[in-house]
Length: 137
Image 1 (tube, rainbow, N blue to C red):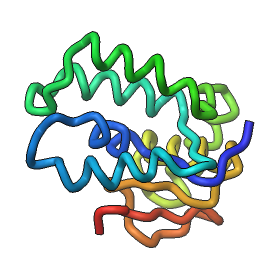
Image 2 (image 1 turned 60 degrees about the vertical axis):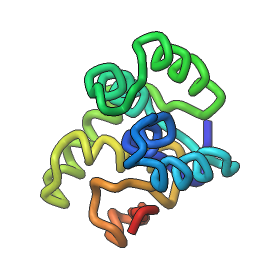
Image 3 (image 1 turned 180 degrees about the vertical axis):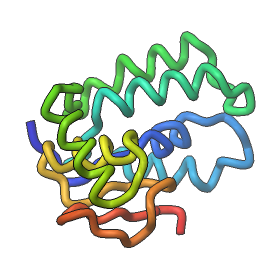
């Protein structure tokens, strides 16, 4: 299972948002999701479903979120494993970032990605060969 670029949760959320204030980010996110070589992790899929079904402003029903999750299987999705957790703990400590952000970085690394598209991590930051790009910057 390999990918070149990794999508953080917010990209998938924006791609499905029905909130008019997200229109520009939605288009950017949809463009990214259409690129070849995109990968995700089980964490991203879980977080997407959680956010999509909890934030009313997004206008995403439970059923619609469930359908999106079903469609995400088209991407390589890295499972949560002991190795991922262990490496994320090390990355969290090394870079002084939260565990879940570190798990995103390590999932990208394990998929072979060199780029993580994220609005949450520091734009331009390099985490040992994984560069963060904020596509909305």
